Amino acid sequence: MKEIEINLNGKGMRIGIVQSRFNTPVCEGLLGACRAKLEEQGVAEDDVTLVTVPGALEIPLALQLLAASGKYDALIALGAVIRGDTYHFEVVSNESARCVSDVQLGKGVPIANAILTTDTDAQAEARMRVKGEEAALVAIEMANMKKALA
Image 1 (cartoon, rainbow, N blue to C red):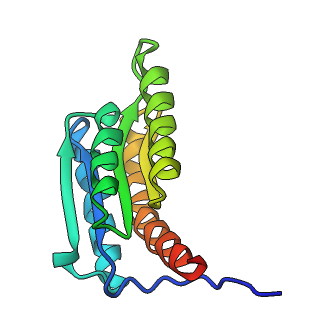
Image 2 (image 1 turned 45 degrees about the vertical axis):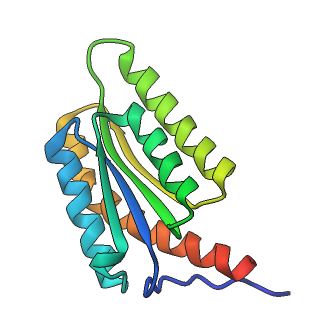
Image 3 (image 1 turned 90 degrees about the vertical axis):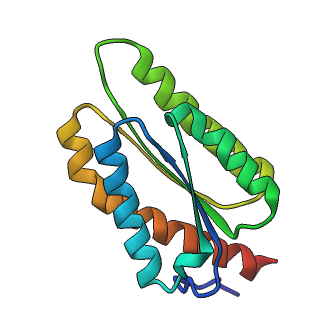
């Protein structure tokens, strides 16, 4: 049996990041952790492109445009949807996740989805570092898996 090994070497990899500006402190925390982990894994700063958008529902369109460019090995979605008093939380959470998956499957470009969906600001702040780091590792691993299967 041939097994594709996990490869977390990001050297030479081109990564696109789409970050929501809504819930800025959490999104900046996600971005900082993500960028640090990408660098730690060998991704050069010059090989990372950051696009910011107003909120989580705008992330999929920016991802789609980046994916269509053919310039990126993987993409990363960073955002935070924090529950409020209305049904809007469910709409934004569900639609952003569905659309991110649609872009990934439709364009064939790996996307690490780190759009947090939490009940409170404190939960989001507690998760932002770990999720930012995980997004970087997922993007690298999936891009390398895609290359190995090509």
